[in-house]
Length: 295
Image (tube, rainbow, N blue to C red; front, side):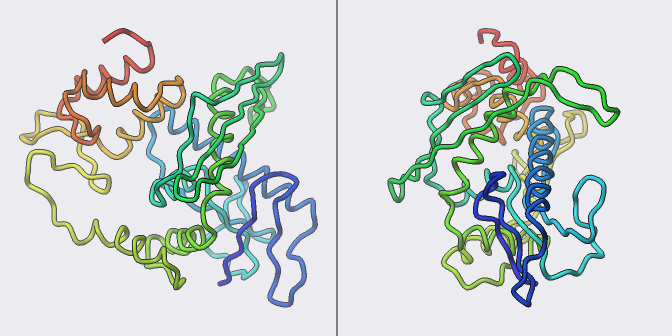
């Protein structure tokens, strides 16, 4: 299956996959449909992260012939002109593995209007000293499946997340994006593209399998979430989703990374959130982020 990547997930620039014969896979209207559906799914990922839900959808696939109601591509689809791209979560995780991309929140510009929120952010690649600007506008209203229109309590968080995505995505090397898509589209199998990014991705994918179940005090890893209890005869540790919840809450309440590090160290006594050893301290940390209560 050929890998086709839209250049930038912007409405006016969403590209369409080409078939093996070289013809366009869909009309221009379908490009807008791809962007709209992916954008809505990114919004859902942002909200799920803020609610502390576990996320693992890094790559979106779109087929104009076979699609479910939510825009996802059914597993029985074998078309070769499928359009693929990184989700909001995929962009964040790919940037984390690439390392060196910094988004200074102090440079963020937020404009509130009567009916929308617009956020402008800058992403900087410290390896190449290049930067990109990301802009996103989010309506303060949202339409439910029932047709009802109501206020969107997450409009500011969605605008910020999309602005980050739009700024970071152009800085990621195409070879890394292709390797990431090949890796995660095949459910974590080894990527097939011979690029300089394959080795670290291969090591990252194989590492959880190579490490046996730890027996030391802090037993939980991102691939092995612990149960939220301390009465089962073992040390409690946060699951991968619970760790992501900390940063999701911080993102939604405009708490800086430095402040988060300070809160984790002060409230929980550790620097790595994955090593928090008390459910009580974990909940106290989350409550402090949400309410802004002094610690």
